[in-house]
Image 1 (cartoon, helix red, strand yellow):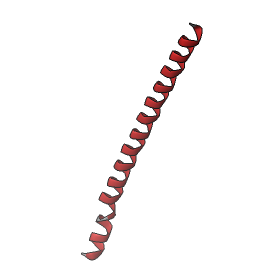
Image 2 (cartoon, rainbow, N blue to C red; image 1 turned 45 degrees about the vertical axis):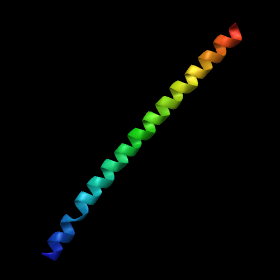
Image 3 (cartoon, rainbow, N blue to C red; image 1 turned 180 degrees about the vertical axis):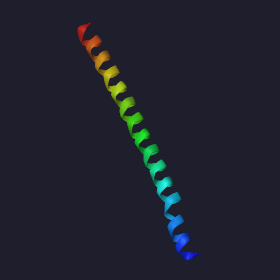
Image 4 (tube, rainbow, N blue to C red; image 1 turned 60 degrees about the vertical axis):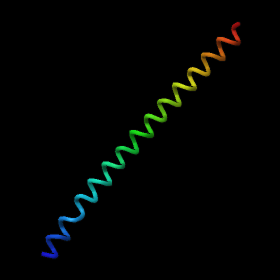
Length: 52
């Protein structure tokens, strides 16, 4: 029984690690996208103010 438990235990841990890793990647991507949008907006506003 111990050998069966040893075989079965790693799978949920690995699944949980992968799911959390994917969530972290999604958060990083969303942060990068929002930062890029903010930078683009700032550049647009700067160009608009400089042209005026």
